[in-house]
Image (cartoon, rainbow, N blue to C red; front, side, top):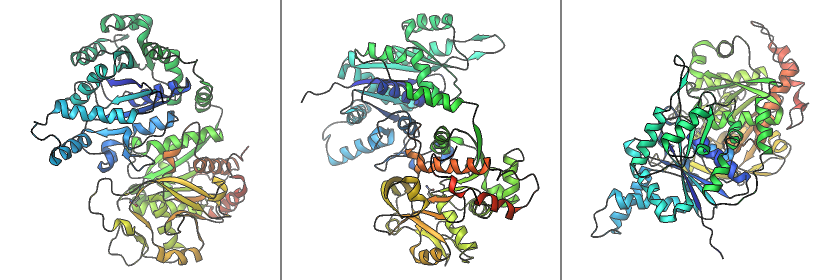
Length: 575
Ligand code: GLN
């Protein structure tokens, strides 16, 4: 069989962090796939943690989980949302992981007699891992984390520099993402930081042939020409990526700047024109003002950092596309709920108004848990569409146990390990686990859906596969009691040992899942659970269910009105 020559595109970043290098990489992948190429992407993270699994969301944002159970950087989430290729553990590695392998090799005696050094041993391991991830693809995008000039990224830059002579200049391309700031008082864009950044990376022997300039407004030709002249790239290789209304516009912006065309030319690839219709549709739908706004309260403790719930907020946006609604997420601090009560905190977070739905996302630890339980109770009693994800399922179960099944001490072993009423308990397989990193129940597992449930109706099939990241589960010794009280276990592991989904009847939409459906939602394929949830929220709203005026406390009336909308919430069934 003819072996495929893989082309490599190395993406580095300069000037400042957080300029969207990951998104840019993902969009390049999307454009190349739209041209019919088989593309993948790898994120190289220079920090020492073996993976981001042990890092707090405050430090690092969301941990993205792959099908094969990798706890990875959130950029892999961008890759999966923009590209058709599914990521795996191979697509993200850190300095920690590279050193771990090299040190293990050394202990085994693989380098006997040799001095183990950054060059060649660390750089060789970096290159080995990149090539492994690239196998079988036409193009492999390699994004180097951090900003040029960081000490810890030097071995990565050296490795990607060497790749050019390893695989050939015609098969490698370096793209540098920089910031071109606009100085308001001078009414001018400034190119100097970009010039310095290019000078710096060139000093490491890497010569970018494409410069992607982030800016808050479009750059004019004069500025682009200046960057071209001072940074040694052709004028048409200075690509401008000004701020966009939605990230889903970015593939089109980059295409209009000629980026994908330049890339295929520079890498000597022949492809047809890209098929961009899906992106045109998605971008126009996300930016359309002509949609009903659906307001969703996300109740958690990491409310300061939207990055912690990246996949979740994107999944909701995708469902906005599917249901023709504009998603407004209000972040509600569960600890504040503990102090001031659900309704007042929700109203405070939403300019005095109630919300159309409540979502409790994944999370860890006891802090803020009572506030989350109160939010779940409020949603259940007030018949507000409710979606619980991972910890959200555990919270909803505890709430139901306490207030419906009359197990007033119900809690989770995570919150109160000594409690005698742990309706949520540590998983059997987790009892022997003592190492924190990579040891949760991770990755995709099958789940069987019970006939006649909302879950089964939403997915439209008896078995699904979803990704997990947890240590605790519904305690089976309480299952019968909870079921008798009305809790429906709509999804379980095929052997029926683990509860994967719960729901309650006589409620417009109350579903919780032990897995993380947000990791599988893409703008091209919005996840059915999110779509159904948003549709339910929209339907409740348009039927006037959530129009309680400030101070109005008509719980019963409100409940009656929302319940009547029950049948309208199936996926794609709203008008
Ligand atoms: N802390 C809970 C557990 O480990 C939930 C985890 C999560 O929400 N990802 O089971």
